[in-house]
Amino acid sequence: MSDIVHRRSPVLNMVIWGLVLVWIVAAGFPFLWTLWGSFKVQGDFFSKADWTNAITGARTQIETGAAFTGKGYYGAWVTQEFWRAVLNTMLIVVSVVIISLTLGTLGGYALARSGKKYAFYLLMLALVFRAMPHITLVSGYLLPFFEWNLWGHLPTTIIVMVAINQPFTLWMLHSFFLNIPKDLDESAMVDGCTRFQAFRHVIVPVMWPGVVTTGLFSFLLAYNDFTVTATLLSQANQTMVPKIASFLGTTQTEGNVMFAVAAVVSATAPLFVLILFFQRQIVSGLTAGAVKG
Amino acid sequence: MKNRTFFWFILPSLITMVLFIALPIVSVALQSLHIEHEAVMVEVENCGPFGCKQELQVDVEETAKLKKERPLGQFNGLGTYTNRNHLAVAEIGEAWQSSNGFADFISKALNLPFYRALAFTLTYTFVVTPLVLIFGFMIALGVNTLPKRIKGPTIFISLLPMIVTPLIGALILFWMIDANGVIGSTLQWIFDDPDLSLKASPTLTWIMLMVYGVWHSAPFAFIVFYAGLQTVPSDTMEAAMIDGASRWERTRYVVLPHLMPLTVFISLIQLMDNFRVLEPIISFSAQASATSLSWIIYNDLVGTESQFFGSAGATSVLTILGVAILLIPVLIRTWRDFNQKVV
Image 1 (cartoon, rainbow over the protein chains, first blue to last red):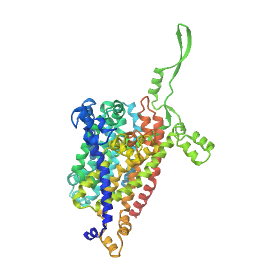
Image 2: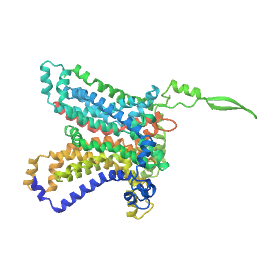
Image 3: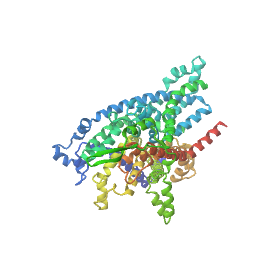
Image 4: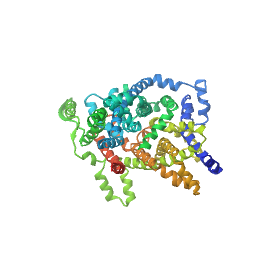
């Protein structure tokens, strides 16, 4: 295809490069800016006088004696006890991923191998469930949860999040299992395995790439969730995202916005690392549903 | 696969979905037909230094007892649906009669909370979705022409706005467009208007929310389109080139038709996700100028004094109806495809 590259006019080349450059700046600059600014004082991050202060840290130098300060991080992690939220998030996310994947692989495998009409209906039903705005479901839980004293606890939130993620997990794993040749488990069954043994000994060893990719998305859904965690968890069990949201109410008035900025950067860092290591899986996962769909 | 085996494999997954997705829909519908108990009043004799008086007082004990006995509240029928905060039947009727012209009627209707939220939700959904498709496609075309070595890092940066928590991503943008933030103050300088604030004007707030929406979702469309571009059949492309098709014609008549199924997929996902827009409104503290259906439900549920389950339920049922209307064309289409495949 190299002859196509040669035939592109210089004007078109400029337009394409310009477009890509604008997009990269739009996508990346906000994060870079916030990361840099999180080590400054509020007077620099929201600089009335001159925006270059946010880069040089003029006020930061006056207030703290150095161009960088960890005050925001100290305030968030120690004073506001952000570490508790981090622990809660880790607990929830890990449990959600493990349980979702266990239920999802069993269900997805069955859906991929059934070939009956009701399997298709179930997939359609899952699609409808996927479309339900989470907040409408939450408003259905709250009252019963209050009545039965289930509200506010981590396990309740975990199981709710597993359920909400299930339609998506089923769809994704279903399409991965369709890619694994049927002959594999069927020949095992001819040799005398039951369906479950065939699944356990033949399918499980080869399903890991699909499971890892689906796991990544389950992780993201649980990690990024705001609706469920903000409404179903008590103050003590709060996770990172609702904690940051609550910073907005309290700290903006007290002039502690930098706590929120530091917390935001802390919560974004793991996602950065995740993309760094799993970029290929994320891209393949995003397209898997599309190509099959 | 035998029916029995299928049943056991799918059971755990099905149980969670029935318990936590299907039943809540029923529960929401039930709640929407009920309304909170009124406080029980008792008449007590209040005797002070100036004689005795009969007074009405809230009987706290009785009220608590009533709440405990019937936690759903009292039956209200469709009352919650028709009241001012939801469909506002009476107010709409009155506005229709008293307004002089259609524009006047619309502006009156948009003062009612439900219609205001509906207007924003629909505008957001139907502005952001096509823009995401267009931008995603353009970025995909652009990145596809880059040299191999810088493709990887470009995709890495492109993924950021989508992968980062929506609430956090919106916050980061919000801080930058603050009047003292870097974008906000640059805009003030460009327009030479020191009082320019993106937060103060409802129109600008709507635009900012939609800019956020496009920024957040464009990477998704980009990645899907980009993957699609890798599979454009090269013989069709070469044939078009031999026939003398220009670059534009090749894009229009070979690439676009090839990507059509992906466009349907992205639109479907985007319609579902944009219809439930909530986080950016919270991050931008935009509720004064823009509310969404999800936001009204959220607001009813996290109220500081008390929660309005009836009201939240009614809005939820109306939202679910909205989702159903959005989904029907897709479901009918899939249904037809499936039946064709079987025959």
